[in-house]
Image (cartoon, rainbow, N blue to C red):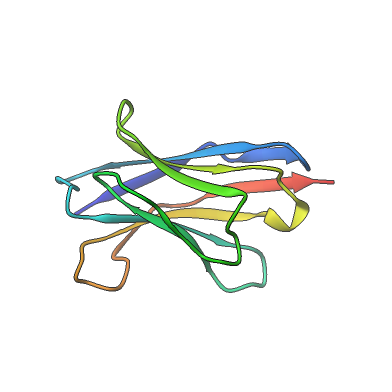
Length: 119
């Protein structure tokens, strides 16, 4: 079992940046792939990007490429999502998820963290 906990959400003004973190425990995650998703009210869940737990380059959904950066914070053992130049349309619940390749579906999910962007 993998337990994921997101943090860092909140109310921010448009134009500002935000850093979300995902902490994971429960088992060794070196073979896992970690991802960030978001879901806005009334919308389907949207894939933002993913990265291997043991680092390397992140992959991104082309629709969000540019303002979103996913990294592994080895010092704090977390996966980080940094969002620059936030816009009201970025308002959503942001989720961290994990899967173990070659399993294609993300098996483990955090509870989500709310990000609200005011104009």
